[in-house]
Image 1 (cartoon, rainbow, N blue to C red):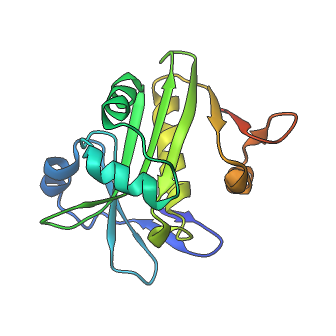
Image 2: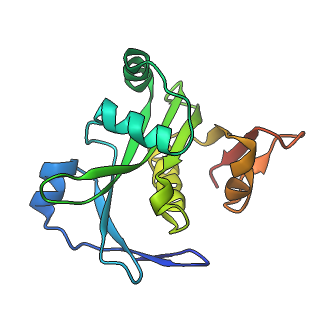
Length: 176
């Protein structure tokens, strides 16, 4: 399966053996590669996040530091948390993250989406969002709200999100 980005091609790789994928990242994780790059990335909702590593990722994208105990609670109360790792047999590195809150039945809100600046522009943010929306749709959620900073609104508009009337901070997605 090839997922297209105007600038790159991302392929669902199936490079890692199923046992390695499940042991490192959990069930339903999948590996992918970016054209002209041998790096293996893995998207998963089951691998536990290291809070220090998550804090480093969020700071790398310019977010202010959040108290770790509050981040831990926020993750525990989220209905879906997804990580994107650069695979390494010894030390997989968290390079992307997203989380949703909601009632778990009808609606969800995406609050935090981050891709390390080193890996931005490769189409990995789109992959992370597709994975997130697929998982939400899989549990029956058909209405998703997204809050984002003004400088990334174009990224979401290019993926088909509809902006709220003032077009400033909120976008909506509806399953077909």
